Amino acid sequence: MNWLFHLGRYWMFIKEMLSRPEKLSIYWKQLLRELDNFGYGSLGIVALTSVFMGAVITIQTVYNLVNPLVPMSAVGIVARDSIILEFSPTMMSLVLAGKIGSSIASEIGTMRVTEQIDAIEIMGINSASYLSLPKVVAAILIFPFVVIISMFLGIFGGWIAGTLAGVISSADYINGIQDSFVPFNIVFALIKTVTFAFLITSVAAYHGYHTEGGALEVGQSSTNAVVYSSILILVFDYILTQLILT
Image (cartoon, rainbow, N blue to C red):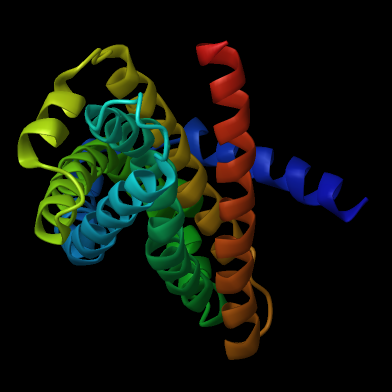
């Protein structure tokens, strides 16, 4: 029943974070710093992962496309829809959960064990809101742009890999990514991205905020933040797909 305890305390943490927010002027510098950290600071790993992800999807699709009746342009269709619907929003969120989630949990956890949060509360500031809300808002604002960049780089990486390996022509691939395109797929991917952004930052902030002990417990909180946010991403990926696409 330990999960019920954490679930209840998590919702109490969210309520406290949203109930008494401080003035916008207090949050502004923090918000800008988090936007830079979550966006520009994550572009390197997002770009690298996306390009190779698109390349692998394209090459594997070609080698599994053994039916001569299926046109080669189908490779572009499969690569495009796989990247837009699943790999960019979900896989990138899992990558960012490891990078950003652990950073948030360790940062807030360190402040907890060094009693910096107690000092903030003594000054009459809502510590849960002050420390967590700028991170949540920044992630919700910047993650969609990161995922859109990931989509573009994933499709571009598939085109580069397919043409350089000689397994598909450039014309076939481009025709495939243009064929039967459904714009709502991008909307659906961004809905998932915003949901995952909230889960990653709020779960990580929760674990960091309720850290007890010392340096070892900070590390455990960081690990728990990554594990639980990754599990929730997969669970909500299924839930949103079931609710929206079926």
